[in-house]
Image 1 (cartoon, rainbow, N blue to C red):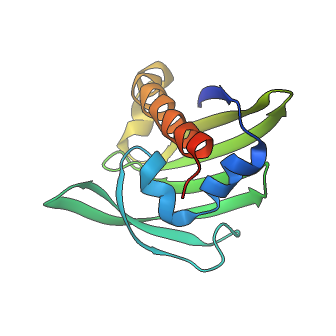
Image 2: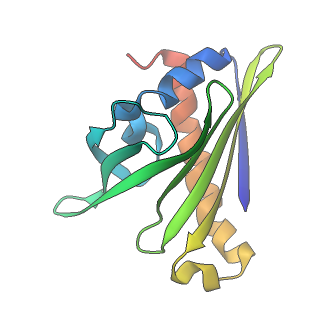
Image 3: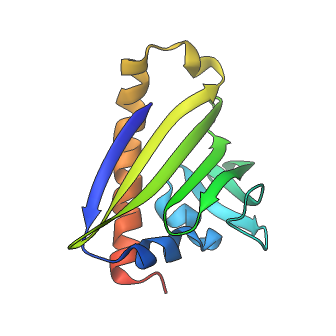
Length: 145
């Protein structure tokens, strides 16, 4: 499991507003390039984001599914780690006196990358997830609208 953290100076509500708006997913999730549809009950358990990964003209349509959701606290997703397999991502938001901290933990759950040692997976997932949290923080700090 690879875990990255980012402290930001906004309330939990601001971060949750970004996560709860499925249409913003490609704005913060590195690898997602466009949204095709968002299930109406997003981010309820079992709902899906229908997105694409890659760059035109080599786009692959895929989905990300909510495994667990505690509003304003935690969101657990299962989605593509294409071409590596499937990944599980846990996002938690922890309130702080000066804002909040976002914690993102992720690991590959299926596919050929599972055969790589954890340190090798961390070299790929760590920088990718650090960038995802940077984007998520920018959206929360600046307002997503």
